[in-house]
Image (cartoon, rainbow over all chains, first blue to last red; front, side, top):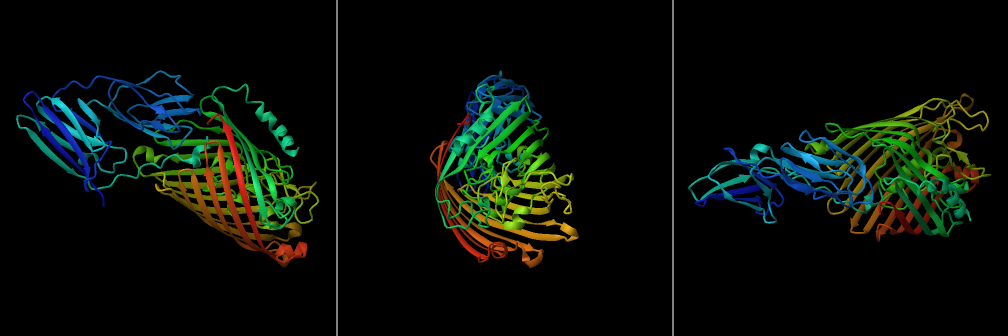
Length: 210
Length: 406
């Protein structure tokens, strides 16, 4: 069976380290698109809030996964010509945007860390995620499964990864690392379960449905 | 001219379009067919053939003209209307096939509720998932779902509750559905008289089936209340991610088989059936569907209980790559008659092969070959013809669709 291997290496230059994360399959294929968060054990200022956009194109959220700092806002324009009705029942942020075209609503404010699952009350297959984090450093792995945080002050950190298709328990996706005088710290994670299959693409079979 | 007449009948729906709110969704489509058939006289012409088009109806035909509207009423209610014209042969074949109010409250804590009030198809088909209860795989529906489209409709209220496990990080969703309905007492008369057929016709709510003056199958309305007893259905659904769907339904119109309409003499047909189906889809474009339906219909004229047991099952395999879809389906169906002289007994099977090309959101081109072998006792009893019929129908379809969603 496939498993995921996540390799963490930590290097610490004189004025701060660069935390680099390499997420890969057990068979060495890269794990692209995984959410990476790095939280400091000591008090670190969280990232500044941002403004993001999750569009709705061809009956899908675009992008279908974003990572934002706590306090950020997200706009949900509907670029389709059919109406959408966006909702979240996730405890992190419950909200509803009644039936609409275009961009009639102000951005939604996300003031609590956690995962928000997005849906459309008209088009059941639409599915999206907003990962709201209070971490000092965060991002997503690139096509080669890599992610890097530069200029990280010395100290203890908690590194975790997440993806909507993971079957793993949270504990197996977390590591404590120390950015110290040493040049680097290397962490490897061997995951035991494969990802869930990705959702099937919207195709002609649903094209004429509304 | 008849086409024009049909469009005029649909015009009250069209009249809603110009003054609509921004959120109104609408869709208009025209499906024209070029048909080659050696089939016996069809059900729509009062015969016992199993095809939609018989050998007297080759050439250019109107497959379906359809107008569908979804009008939001406030935030969580919507009015849905689906009207069609089905061509010149189906008597009184213009009208609404579905018309209902839908209540769609927002899901709460992973639970979602849906309520439909009005006239609509009961759940249970894994095949008829495209717009207007059509099939995205073939032109003609399976025998099981052709029968549903001809004879079965919910005119009442339906409630559905779903647990959206996949939105909570799980692999499964589950749903339970229940419906209470009236005006479906004649359901069963078609399958008991002519057996199963394979077509894409849907009897309009106010429409008729059969043909005027036919001694075999005279025109009759199917969606009527005769015994003033409500029917019900209960169903369940389980989904594994968006890959595998399992559907089950138990339907019972609770008709009193002794009851009949004092004016027309039409009986209430006691019809019950169970339906179970599985659909599996893969990332590489394959879809497989297996559906099984079994039940009975009965009447009791002069204290003589006459029952016809019926069954229909099919397996469909479809492959989609880009805009191309190729599908093959095998149907088996039959009616076991409990009436004197085996009136209405049937045994049959069919092969369907179809190629669909979705050139764009507007244009679809389709080619379908349908081969049906059936033995129907009524061909000998009512028409003095051989019971066995082998029928072939080839259709080329061009469909153009416009709408607010494209």
